[in-house]
Image 1 (cartoon, rainbow, N blue to C red):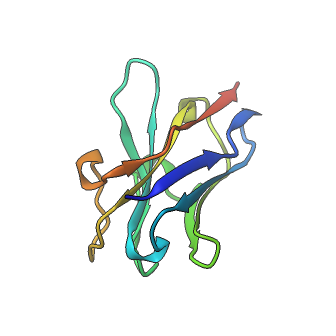
Image 2: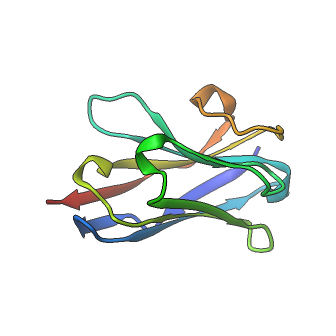
Length: 125
């Protein structure tokens, strides 16, 4: 099991930027596939971005392509989500998740075993 703690959320205006961080502990970070999900009130948890354990493959949901960037620093056991050109519809609680090593990024919550507590991102128009 890996313990995940997100940080970096907050209130930002439309068009602004935020960088979310996810600190992992418990096991070797680089042995996991990692992902970012988000959940807005009344909505299901949705995939945002993912990265494979060796950092070679990334995938994004279409609505954030070109605006968000997922990256990892294995030496620091930290996952990042750089978010730019934020829109009101990006408002949600953002969750970091860890799952088993796979060649491809999993885009559903069932592909991940461990979750952080979430961090709120609010984009005001």
